[in-house]
Image 1: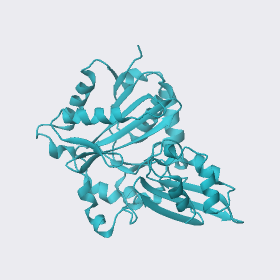
Image 2 (image 1 turned 180 degrees about the vertical axis):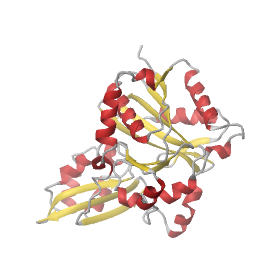
Image 3 (image 1 turned 90 degrees about the vertical axis):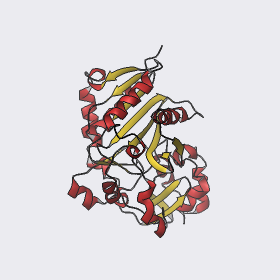
Length: 331
């Protein structure tokens, strides 16, 4: 029988925690893993987002808010010690989904007496307010699904840190974006603190005997050198977090039901010389594979669409189709 682990990670360093998560994804190749963890003040930006356009860098510098890029798609999120993060790692089955993990998170919350439901593009909602966003990725034959529960987060810092972009919301909606997000604490009894919430979630996962609990110090005690190497060389590097945010000659952007798609390109001789695609779409695979595949293509809708046909676009853009993506690249 494969070992399934429930890991309680005591670290609050966002750079280390993302490195640990990736290490578990890469090296624990059997069974299932659930990890509960918290980050100190940080913006965790989506894999394919253009960082300068997603966050207020002056504010994050002033407030000492760490900015770290994750490996999953979706939008930027604000983390602090009022949040509780969760990660699920399991075998990837082509054509399958991680809905069972989304359901597990929702059921754990319902066991606390709140009317949680999975809705929107990738959210967990209570009374229409988002209390958790989720994202996922494929890595070999494994899949990662993770999310962040807003328990008692500083929503004013969330508002100040993240830029609201006009193509995502109308002018009226910009003013009400704050009302779309809620704290789980507001829906629980007054004596339920974050520690109690974590304990309830641990019990919910352990009660059927499918998981055994492990602390990170026991699980990775001989692997710290590898995790620290991944932390410093990737998640704590300028190249990973900021280096991809470059200026390009052409810039097109469109909003679809499945998210925002944005393209930056250098065009020379009527062909795409450089291409970068970013946005908050739900990518399972690195969208750089498509961007690289477009290099050398004539800057024409039909040619771009023909290249896109060679990729399983759902894995890169979720529900956003080839015609929509091509319309962004060739406006």
